[in-house]
Length: 144
Image (cartoon, rainbow, N blue to C red; front, side):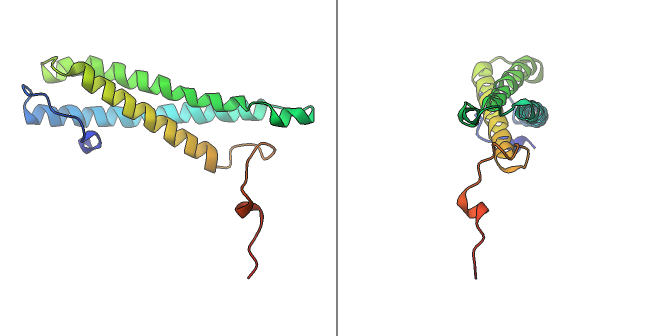
C-alpha cells in the first residue's frame, strides 16, 4: 500500500525497511482520511442542497452555496498533515525531511479528497433535479 506515495524521496539517514513501513502506515492513514472526508463532504452537500429552496425565479441563478462543502478537503489535508507530522519522529527516529514529507502527504490527501468529492457530486444523482446541470447529450436521445 506504500506505493501510493512512491514520489516521496527517502531521507539519507533512514533505512529502507523503516521507510517502507512508514509509507505503508501513511498510505493506510491517508486512505482512512480520504474516506472519512469524502463521506462528511457528501453528507454536508446533500443536506445543504436539499435544504435550499426556490421561492422566486432568481433563486435558480443565485450562487449554489452547497458547493462550499468541498472545503472539507482542507480539513482532510490538515488532518493528514498533523497525523503524518506526529507519526514521523516515532516511526523513523529522525526528524530529517519531516516538514517536506508532511506537506507532500497533506497536499496529496487534500487534493484526492477534493477530486473524489467533486466527482461524486457531479456524477452521482445526489443533486436535486431543479439544480442539476445536464448537458444536451443526456437530455436528447440519438435517433438511429
